[in-house]
Amino acid sequence: MELGMTIISATLLLLIIVPLTLMQLKKRNKEQLLLKSLKTLSNQQNCKLTKYDVTSDFAIGLDQATKTLFYYKNTVLENISKHVNLSQFLDCEVLEVRQNNTRNKQGDIENLNLVLHPIDKNGTVETLKIYNSKENYQLNGEVDLTKKWKDLISLSIK
Image 1 (cartoon, one colour):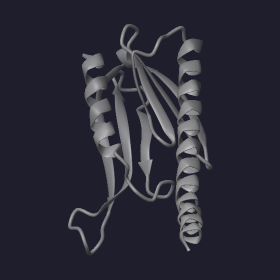
Image 2 (cartoon, rainbow, N blue to C red):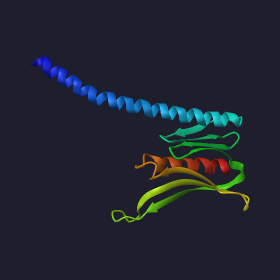
Image 3 (cartoon, one colour):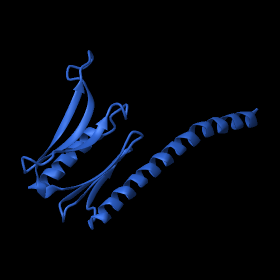
Image 4 (cartoon, rainbow, N blue to C red):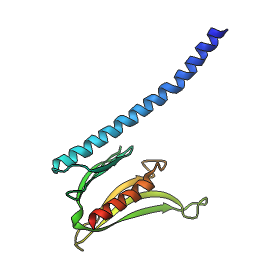
């Protein structure tokens, strides 16, 4: 009887632990690939990342010496890599697009972007996609991360 309970307990434990471990390894590998791509992008511009963050589908980094921002996003729909010279920009803002709903007066966040406004009026506005509800069903720290990077970029611009 004890041997049967031990076997059942071990089997149940394996059925729980193995999938969770595999999911965690897959996530870690994906983040490592994103970081590697971001570092490759910065090396191509002869820069070195002094600050960076990696999430499940994008990586963002900054070379504070050259004031260059690097962004790499990899999703099923698109693969985006950008490097931005921050000395050409006036300011940075967080742009939240919300969808109205009955549960929340403000609405759910549908899109979350970092928007860089150029010094030159004829220059192009640079938009970095942080979160899209069609790609990710749930926010996972993107709001705080966006505010952090807005502040970092604003400090580098000034």
